[in-house]
Image (cartoon, rainbow, N blue to C red; front, side, top):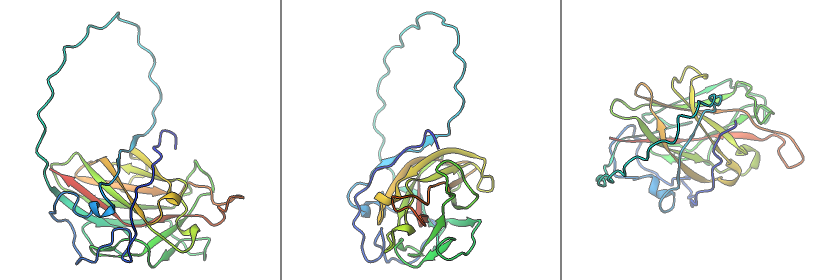
Length: 254
């Protein structure tokens, strides 16, 4: 998708428990300290923002002369940091406060959808499994396969951050999005309601994680969808390539 943001690698040491290396008891939405789990990614996590969905360029308006310069504004005093008011995991094998759904799943051996039993985040109510989603065969067109993560975060939030786990596998084709395209939806039941987009090169982030900041909340819900556009053939080892759908963690601050 044009206008999407290509993401860079975030250094994260993968432990035996998965990219976030936690064996805590299952939890859902809960209060916790600032970046309590996200700091385990390896130092301060890299934070990026999704892009707007491209729209047609407006017609130029006639010139009204040189605008008058605005007077300088006084800087606002820094705000005291607050801990997150909402934090929850969602994804394959998770029973936390978020919701995870798959659309279009079918079985056809290595050519269809399949589950990889380990390599994702284990802990916090998640068992570490992830789903491999077949690609559409086109880098710009979708075929209808998708995975959706959503959270009902409640009132008082306009944006949240989302930590995306890119799992690790013994087989390169299981985690092979280059890139994988994610849409931020207004409505989890309406694939045409995308308002933001971001891309992740899964091949350079296997076993690591990335934080997406300022993901917009609509009607007290936060929704991210992975679509299936992608090239799964070619001379560069792309045959059988799949997108990996693993765990995500939403964090919202009041």
